[in-house]
Image 1 (spheres, rainbow, N blue to C red):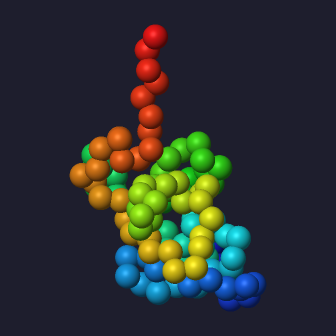
Image 2 (image 1 turned 60 degrees about the vertical axis):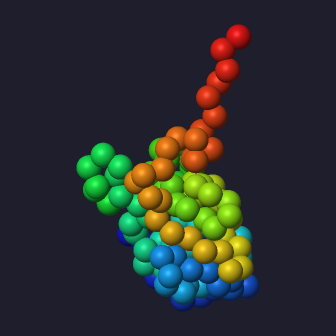
Length: 106
């Protein structure tokens, strides 16, 4: 399925759960993590089952990760940057922390 990347172009350094990793500039967080051998991005809030990217186009919301000051983002839609600190999403967060906006009723 996915193989660790060895031919990085314009490398950037980042960390996931404290583990130092390297990716190519321009990669999404999901591509960078998968290319580094990381397949579990979070656990299901309901069952605790490991979750990771599924669609890679932003439709499924399975790839949520916590990124430093940015908060919770979809890894498949967010570009990796130098020094980015990424961690699994805590199961104790609520929807307001995920950038999900309630549509106001008129």
